[in-house]
Image (cartoon, rainbow, N blue to C red; front, side):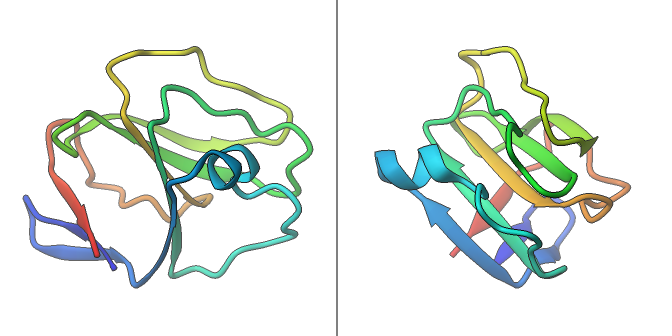
Length: 111
């Protein structure tokens, strides 16, 4: 589960953790879609790309304290972000499903 601790609500009920090198590298590649309640949490992530992806995604970047530092909505296939060393986690979910009221500084938790 992915929870907004600051505001007390569930963002996604089904999460997958990309902790090891191969899972982080693969990310969502090879999938044609993901469920609405799904989020991929990528550890040690300073930037992402959507090359060869099949669908748009929303991306939430977090710092070392799991606080939101950037939100990218509707990232289309074939794009990439710059590298930013402040980013420690990336959360990828289906485009349009990152909460509309989510703001920088809010703390997220997953289990």
